[in-house]
Image 1 (tube, rainbow, N blue to C red):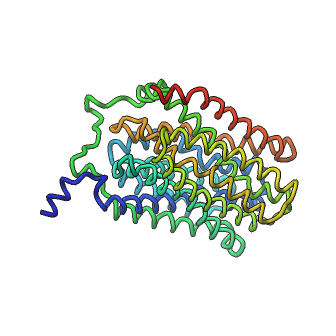
Image 2 (tube, one colour; image 1 turned 180 degrees about the vertical axis):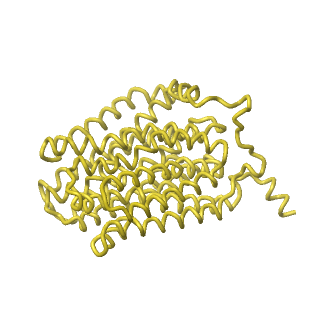
Image 3 (tube, rainbow, N blue to C red; image 1 turned 180 degrees about the horizontal axis):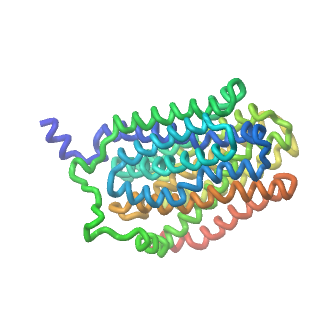
Length: 415
């Protein structure tokens, strides 16, 4: 009788959904060690190879260039193969590539290895988001997405806590070797715990079915939706801030205050912890208010603007350590916290049978910004001889999004 009841029970009503969330969050956290770790180790690599600020930005660009196309492929693959195979394969590729990164000696080899780390990471974000979507009803989905998405800044916390000490004592290559073990363990745990609701009757979408829409046609249909265009614009702007903060906060404090990179890593750790809290709190709030996803993402943009002002002014006016930590935490809460309600917003715009493809398209658009903006920002810092002009440009971009949202969001909510 119990087995019959379990079979008839909807996925979103089963206690097992919390195990799904725990496994997805663990896989995201460990995968994020690979991408967030480059922000922690960027200063060590810069010193080793004598890189400029633009060169440090290029490290992040190489790491993130593969997912621009990889996310499109992974999204369609998710709709065919399911989450366990896709996430498990990605973790394996990431782990091997990070281990290889820890063994190379030249800059060219490092760049090639980082490229393949990015290939593996393409699976983490859409795969985990799709898993959570299928197991949680809308009343809990924002909270669940926020908890899972908290794995990305928590991966940054793990990297910021572990990597500087390892890099100081044993070198940055040893930090990559340690990270490889973490990534492989997280992927293995997800594969052991997770199963898809598909095996209880939700069939994956076959390529040959009459419901299958080619990716190009699906992308055009999405871009015709005002709600998707608004969400995509928000994603590009806010991921730009997040990427720049991750790559340059410690370098900014070093250059403006003479702060050691190890202490800058503490600020990164605090920023990531605050970001993890923000992803949970802001996503949970988006479950509770009218037009919650749209409103909450716009509110985070306002928080990001004030955070940038604080990070820019505090070192110049009163470089008190407590104020600096508060500014870093504020920037992290909003500058990383936006992603929880944003992913929930994207999933609810998408047709359910093409959820993986929709997530892949939206995240691939973000990925272009992740690749380009650290290089552009670093080049601006080098050209301007400081951070004031690049910071003003970044604030202007956020203000542009807020202006666009104020015009478009009311029409989207009525449609």
